[in-house]
Length: 339
Image 1 (tube, rainbow, N blue to C red):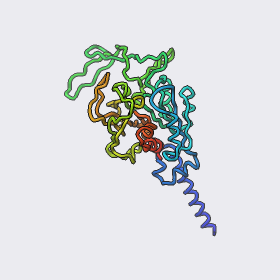
Image 2: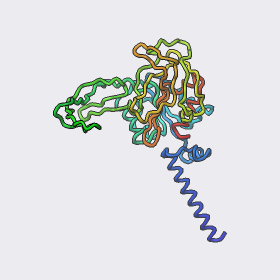
Image 3: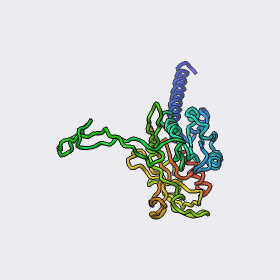
Image 4: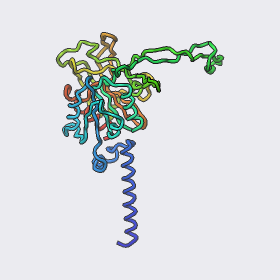
């Protein structure tokens, strides 16, 4: 090989290395899904970076079976995840979360305002991916209040700001926004952090894009044995990564103690997307409110560059264990991690 050919070979090798480095960074940052590059790129990426680390965080009570979820994620028949850890919420800090590409929170009904904020920081500032399950975080920490002060504006009074003229040229009216009224939040995912040095509203409900109402079997007398409550219906295209490959409609059964959370989408949440819903065939009157025909079951929330947050009203492991639908566990892993 003469010097010209040798120089050309070095340039080609340099370009290949540069391309691979760019692809690695794009995959690591989540901008590009490894499966979209090549069927073999995920394996090559994992060989260098190691398989994505997954953490299951749990508490002492609530919907879900964390040990079963870990077992199914590691089982090669379903997912074959290489690194799945499980830890109690009392052992978790933001530093712990930073080590993981995907964090799943379930069976953690009681969480403090600080803990909810920690998971938000994990996603917003550290680029993490979060799966929130069922009734996790709907019970506040000890001594926490759901009361907060809201500013109320009184129209037609002399105040600190004015509204602009409307489209018909009506003169602006003055508004007084100094009045404050004590209110009580009806969404348990909305929290207030208040102490001697700070007063902060933690809008975890808007972060998820949904409002928690109750669990189904708290509203309806569920049977002790499994029975069909409706059909699971995928979003219209059927192409979303979390439901891809599943049937558009599937019979769905539950029993007492193995039910799901009732939530509703926040109307003005632009980043919220209902991926899977439960059609129960009609309106059902619960003990405290009417349960609509269609109930959100999997809802994603767009954070930053993409859908980094997903809410599951029903624990993923129960899709397999109680209904024999393993794809929802597989798709949780592949869909959230861009596989």
